[in-house]
Length: 115
Length: 112
Image 1 (cartoon, each protein chain N blue to C red):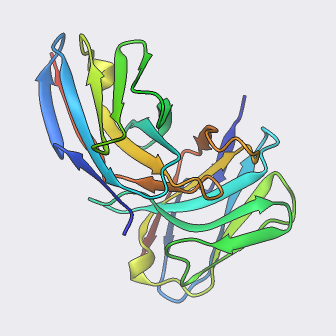
Image 2: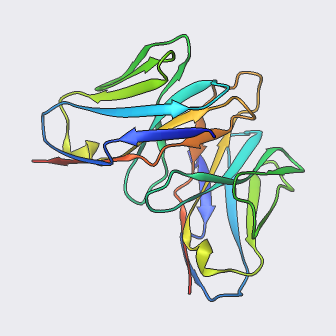
């Protein structure tokens, strides 16, 4: 069972470079999320999607874009990386039903350093 | 502002001992409260989910309690093992598209 898979696991970028983080889930989940985790802080929601073709802003969306062209994939893009975007990024997915007490499954994380 | 606060920030215990981690939240509306375990370099993994009508839930040696009136939760770990060394994160859902508000976590170290 692959669950939620993130690619890549590590990356170093120079300021101003762009990159895309890929999240893939094989559980047929409707909802997918991108979070960032910084030292001493809880995970913060960047963007989320409640279904194929839909995306919405979370708590800290500035500097990021996302796309959900296929149900199983959720892409996070950094158009012009900044040192403030140095963080560990987590993707998560969950069922999208009326029962909101549903489990969220997380990927292994992507450690991004912007120099 | 919706917030989740955890204490202590870090904790060291000896193998075999019990410990209790605390979580206070100011999230409204409240849908459910979750405890996650996050091993170093890994993503969070769910331990328990509780709605406002549940005041205790167990998962093996982990027992979570919830007092929705005081907006407090605790995670009790019994007979700790070395593998319990991890960060434990309290998470509250406000019910909006399963949006989750995360605490900063308690880092637990279990020493032999």
